[in-house]
Length: 146
Image (cartoon, rainbow, N blue to C red; front, side, top):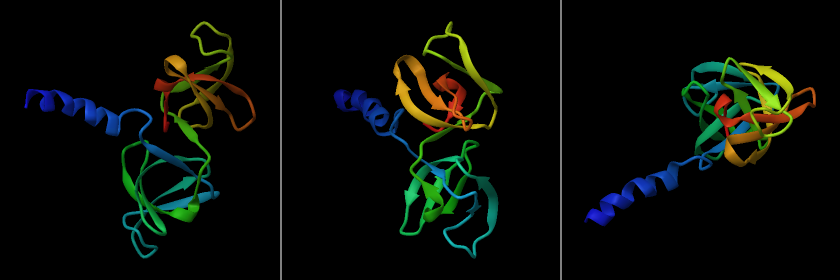
């Protein structure tokens, strides 16, 4: 029984650990988030193109999602695309030319700016692309949605 108890936290980490979540982004210019999976439900928020959302439940035409603030809402599946985006969660994020703290700054992005996730790099870095085309590496701890 002790072995099973010791294994439980490991299994939980495997099921819910980093990288296990599915994220999608809004592909329409704007999309409504509802309190239930229906257009007759109460509209709660409007989100813009490229806003990342964590997928919680997939239905035929609707997806239950979690946003950066932790709110659970519903969105029409057709409003979501497969483009991987992250949202700057820190007051600002400095994208560096290399995945190193001392590397030159490629660009800076303010809080709530969406950046395209290009690749996950070792040691907690993400390669991202700004809407203006600039690329760089940000610390994963400064963004949400990967």
